[in-house]
Length: 318
Image 1 (tube, rainbow, N blue to C red):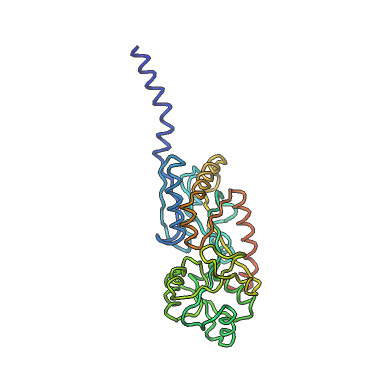
Image 2: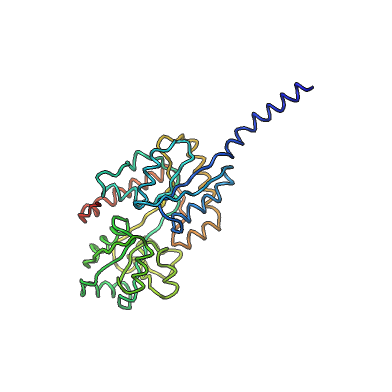
């Protein structure tokens, strides 16, 4: 009897050990930006939901630096066990390769695509330094006053930087880029009238827009943004231009397909939660889950899409 009892206990321990090991593991979702921004918020929303579906601890690890590029270097060197991931904006993967001769990673080879999380476009916002009126009124004023035709973004070499260059080409207005170290300081100068126009994610200016401090007068997507249903697209205003971007979840190279599929299912489950959808939409973002193959295809298409305008701009990162 004693031997049978000991054998049963040993069997139970053996069966329980994989579950215990899974629960003991901690998955890190690294974010290459400081806490509080849209990337950080999205990662935390996912982590909270994925803990239950994966049956393990999931934390967000903020490692700001170099507009999200440094953390991708860390990911490239991580073990391919699915416990170290990065939530990255597309700029570090589809714009940076055309700007840096020694980027330190190959976005097409050095990572494992897992899930597309959200897509988003950009808001064109004007402050008290610009005249009242719609986008065409503002652009006409800028064309007549080229010394004031400045647009702010959250940084040089970002998607929004080159979206501004596309806007200049599409309208014939000689727009001059004014880069800031983040969207918050750019928005403050917009509110203060130091710069007349800002082109950045809606999350940077939407609360100021609602408070009446600035006006979002256009969005750059194919369709209107859910968070700004009364703001027309550029195409609706007669300007043949679009620009959009995405956030994706990536792992190190060499991850096993079954591990990738398991994580992707957990992301898909999280993004079906109405509370998470509402919170993401509040940032002017669109929950837009897609699996590994679709994420890789989207990344490849955007990489090709930005090659010509970036090369035409002549801009090179230092």
